[in-house]
Image (cartoon, rainbow, N blue to C red; front, side, top):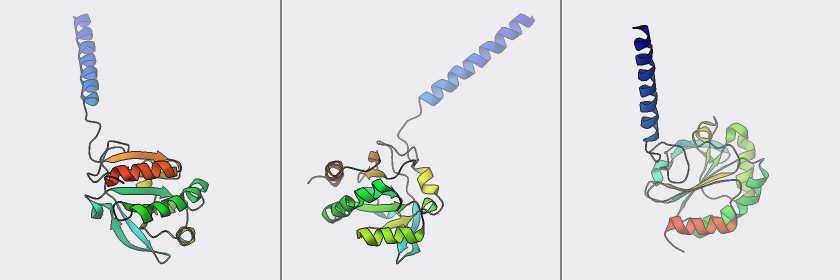
Length: 181
């Protein structure tokens, strides 16, 4: 009798484990609010905007729903960020009317004064948001600077780039999400 009970308990545990595995493996990988990689929907976020060297009113990415976006996480002390920024400013001048550029300074790992000086030095005209608590960088699993996201008009992340974006990659992907040259 004990042997039957033991084998029944083992069978139940095995069935539960197999059922759990099947349930987890059947989850759709591209759901809203999922990990921020190519093919996933962008999770909207709101952060204060850098305005005249201060944290200004909040700006939400949801304000740009229906428009392609380029989102760039950076820090002023980051050499690859410094190297790619002139290309981003140039691309903004070319694509800014078709693609919404958003810079996200991870201020929790930087400073407001340094971020402001960086923006002024490079002549950044697109919105720069301040992630003062690292919450959005964590949400987007940013572990390297810079990290950039190209998002199409449907809100789907087309490309995630960790490290500096090359000028060629920047131009070709912006053309792709903007709908042509």
